[in-house]
Image (cartoon, rainbow, N blue to C red):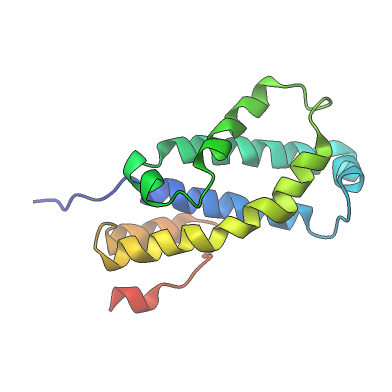
Length: 148
């Protein structure tokens, strides 16, 4: 019989991956104007796509996990999907830049804690975790202790 696994693992790892990529995009920029104008707006546009992807992933996290972890702004992240409907020239670049530079990186520890707790409580399948992390561009956390 195949072991049942939580569907929360992949979207949480995707959110972490997106936050890391957003941080890398914003690295070296001191303000929203520099960030927006970088590479003819390509950096800004890439960040918008990553925010939308984060919103899509946050919608896939179960209500059980969301209720258990209210310290994470699930509702706000879910609303990132709506950014696609807006003209990027009218988006408040300062808010987007602050979100990428300051707000989102502050929740990575909470997301990493969810993964660690779920692995320890065997709600996430360890083999699925290893396989999924292996497909990701980078491994963002080391939970080897949880596997023992």
